[in-house]
Length: 186
Image (cartoon, rainbow, N blue to C red; front, side, top):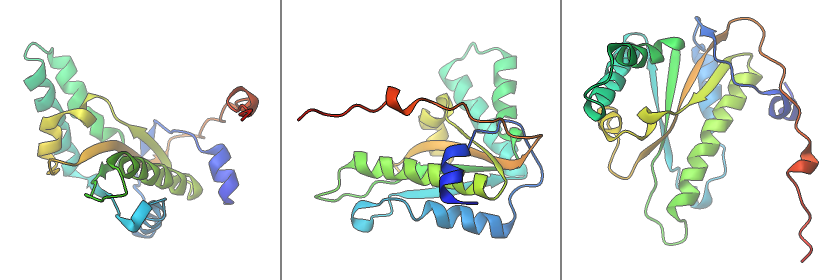
């Protein structure tokens, strides 16, 4: 697949099934993620892959986080949280892991981690895989961060759900570029 084709036609795919990406496909996914802009080559990102029974444990972690912050949460809300990681055969947790540097502010490093997530999504699309970037409250919950082993300076950029698309991916809606670009008069 041509790079421009991937950029213009990638869409989020919510309905995913087995099989998960193969070892060869995963190698390309992560290789693409490692090629993003990275001021001073700090590599301010890391990834956790979650599959198999680990998805069940991640769902339990999500439910514990909700129960801790919302003691009156209804069981249906907790069950939905438990089931969330089961929506795809593979999840990749993208983590911003900023490094202290005199010329590279933390925001640039977090943006680099976001670029890594996007590159991973593009590489999935280019290989015919389905993918969806999800966040939600779990991405910002300190209990979830601790349960995943994040250091105090790290943060979750997103949970990337990956698998085989169920059916044909939708056709992306074309936006009018002129609505988003203005010439600066100087």
